[in-house]
Amino acid sequence: MAIPLIQVDAFSEKPFRGNPAAVCLLESARDARWMQDVAREMNLSETAFLVPRADGHDLRWFTPAVEVDLCGHATLASAHVLWEEERIARDRPARFHTRSGLLTCSLEGAWIEMDFPSHPATESPPPEGLVEALGARPLFVGRSRFDWLVELASEEEVRKLAPDLVRLKRVDARGTIVTSRASSSAAGGHDVVSRFFAPRAGIDEDPVTGSAHCTIAPYWSGKLGRDTILGWQASARGGEVRMRVAGDRVVLGGRAVTVLRGELL
Image 1 (spheres, rainbow, N blue to C red):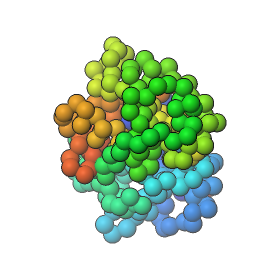
Image 2: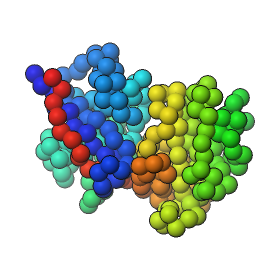
Image 3: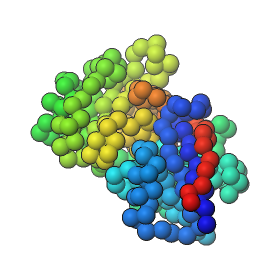
Image 4: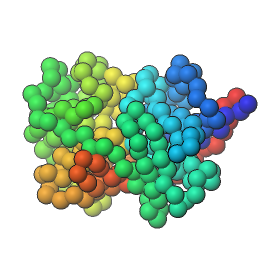
């Protein structure tokens, strides 16, 4: 039986921007090896696998190399697909049972809002090789549950960064978030900019990383003294992320557009 497979550009209202994710709509669970093979075949930063259950959907995320515990853009893409394919009503939330617990998404006009756990970074000495791999002088280095967070002095430094990915791959973490306050007209009114590198997970640079904003949001909320923040991930594709800190949760907002529909044979 052919399996629906839909590709969505997440954190963008326009095609060929934001972060592409594949969403695989299963009728029943498949084994992890098969899902990893499909993700490798799709060769996107994430492929999401959805299985319906009585109170929502089971959701798992795979890069071309590994299964991950949390992925924002593929969750956004999954919710977008369920509403667009009319598998759930647009006035009802999408509920996902994941390795990071229950995640919910709701429609707010053209935006999808995702209720995610907060993963604040604790200031820590940089691990061996991190600063050298980045080739930049950090203002702050901290460790969250998944990643290293590095603040640089300016948006220009963030945008021009060309890390040594071979050395960065040796750093023990899922990935490295690099961020600064936004300052240029190119930032388009955003408060902060960021980039995300995860060569250890098979992704040299991720276009727009929802889960990284679970760390970016509490960090900048503390520095800026407010709960709502607008971020721009300054990859080649680029993407916009709304953030709202709510206690130990972070509400992430983004838009999405379907670019491809097909079937896995």
